[in-house]
Image (tube, rainbow over all chains, first blue to last red; front, side):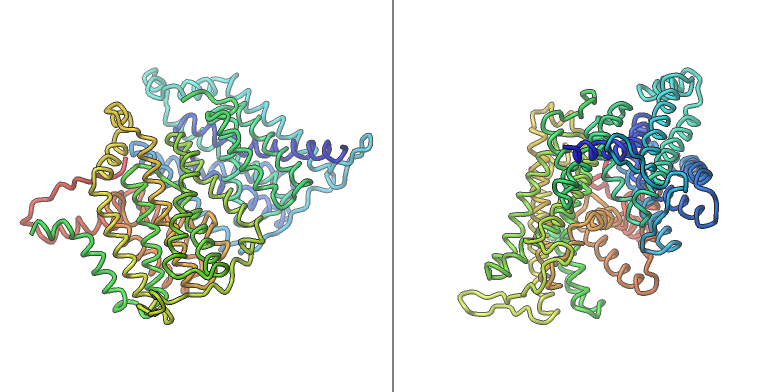
Length: 286
Length: 328
């Protein structure tokens, strides 16, 4: 029985990462109304920047801060100078644009860092395990849970407690209305797109010491992020949280029961939720 | 004259089939063009005629490969039967995936197709006994086309196989052209252009979309089966997300809403890819830029580009209004 409790605890750790990965996708969708297919590539970039900074001798904490900021800045510039010009087109073109961008980024990563994976070790202070009442838990994963929980609170506060957040929420209801009120919705679009990329990059940087880096982790992350938002409900903050943790637990528990099928079961869980609640666990009817 | 105009696209497809051996030195490469053209046709039926953007075409392609491979290896099935099995299973899986995904509109649909692509990839990866897992199905034979022991068409050399694929390709192209010109095709366009209106007029939108999805899955499954026979293996990579992405990209680059555009897109993708990949292994990056370019400036793809060039060459002629508009 203990092994399952441990796997559930592990699952919460992975699930919090999945939440961080998916929440940006969800927020960007809420405002911009299209699914960002380069979200996985932003995750990939975050992980590789973190790896590169580590190779250059930068300490992990700085990497954790700098890598996502660089990803966010990059996304900001892309939105500002290119993506912005195709908002008037049908959504298909937004998706195609982000698919193209993801392909360019993935190939850029392969040409710079090579097609093979690399490992990153967590900082010295987070190496090893914590023992508590018969449980053994890696320190780094404990840190990830605490850190993402703080990030979740921070994001929640940004969305619910700040002026920017209320503009974003209002924009999700009606962008036209917001701009009629005299607010600069264009700037909000850039900011939100950058924020989404920042969270994806942060998730990538946090995941790097757990799973290592390899060029195809972006596609895998995109698939998982989609599952999380489909399970939780698109455009919903709490949906991403519930979906993320659920997916993490399914993956973690299944890896003890049937390790080869752990990834498969994530998608089976998604199909099951689709059957029972087509709009996701916490999604509103569209 | 009107008669010829009706068949002009099929004639163009036949022209491509006849021209390919003159332009391409390798029979395998020429065959690959036609196989991916078939897959792109299936994708175009969804994207260009029904307005469904599917990131899951690799599911049907991969499953078609496995189906044909298994039929040839274990059932010793004849050529056409094993391909028919690929098409039928492709269609059935499309029915299943479609039934789940089509109930969701727009964005959810697009995300679900990608999620299902990942699901079937992991499924194929886990079912090692059937699919061979990472190694794939190996040593798939390529029987001749024969009836009652008489060989009608040998498929031993790559150019012989090309002729067989070419005939099949022209037949499928003609059939699909019939479909899009039929009442069903026109109704699908109505669904694409305004789903709410089509539904209000009394069409069962979900059923129509599902029909398009099944046809698309069958054609793509057939393409996958042909591919497995061409290479003699059904690799795991045929069912990977990358295959789905490639099929969608060649469809978009070719242009949507006209079946022949997909033939252009697939030819471009396979031939340019084959040429560039020897020069620079990371040629996919250029493809990414091209996709960005298409979404920014060239919404009708290569076909649209060719159309406007032709129009410029014939200044006297009034620009014709195409019934098929670009996707919405």
